[in-house]
Image (cartoon, one colour):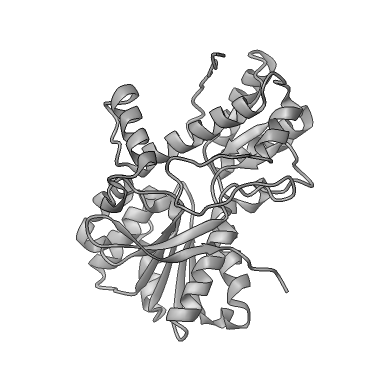
Length: 332
């Protein structure tokens, strides 16, 4: 029966601006919590401040490991799968299917990129020497063309592409221009078809491998799925101008649904402490768009999504394959 007052300011994906806007939310709007701050650098810029103020940094839109650290940052919980967890899954896949690969890595030079590289290295273990070349880029770089030329010339035959949509599209396109056809693994952040693969050219993206933890509206296996029907009806009613097939739309719906569930589970005790308690003990919740068989958070493990299924792009849509895989990697 309550109404949620959602106050929204644009930080332009610019960390100093994030600090300014979040201070405004906390100090003048006096919000109960922040929800879905987007991106690793913006979240990093306000993490210490929000934890000192004991304001929930709820369902942050990042998977960097620093945002699933209940010991040091008990007021921060990320929504995205942990980037190192995702990388552990890729390492497992590479060792099983491409044990003699020569790996070339393109990564964003920040917490996002470094986490993915660390996760892969850790899980490859004594096989980390399979990595023959690494190239980083800055968010301010106009293109990643030079990095792609370097990686191709290294002799790599497996490309680990750790990017966001803009740079992911550039990398896919450049690989095609160079006639470089390695086994191509793309991180989950850069998998939206309309944001990354269409600009890159769908033919160029054919055969790329990634992971997912949610249902894809373009996958016909979910046509009669109750959760997918609920999602599509919601989009038709409340967001008819949006592309309901977009990974951005399914993501927005999934995070908003989980926020509503946490608020309901909090009952009449709408304190910040209780919000965090509920967010780390999510009960009887079956998300409309989660893949069947997914589990959720505990008070000791803040990872909301720690299970994945592999998928491959067929030139039109992502096709899931293999079992649900849980990240069970333990550092030696």
